[in-house]
Length: 100
Image 1 (cartoon, rainbow, N blue to C red):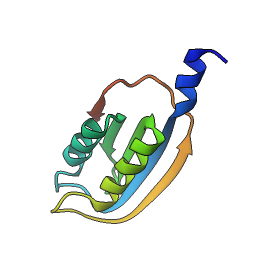
Image 2: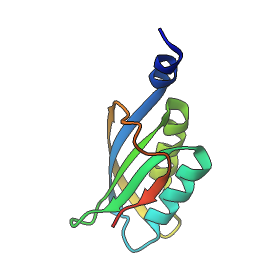
Image 3: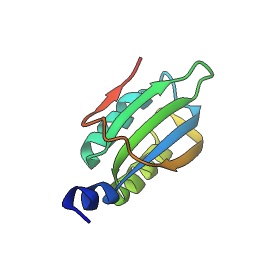
Image 4: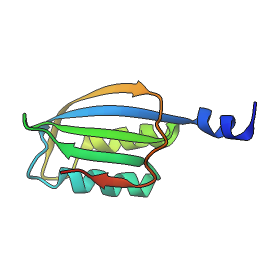
């Protein structure tokens, strides 16, 4: 197994849909800040139905910490439910950004 395979195998990805009072409360900015602090890459965007979608990649332990922060949410928001789908990372993102 090559070194690049070792690095790739450590990386995970998770797709999340966050439900609750998560729009208009700074949730996307909170999410980006937490991702940057934890070294997680990907994006966050609002959905038309009031939920928020998140794509995140990174080491599994960092992603698990990120998920816990997302579940807590910002002080003005209220996270009711987070749907998770663990998947393979794409390796495309090297930052965490807010999509519009």
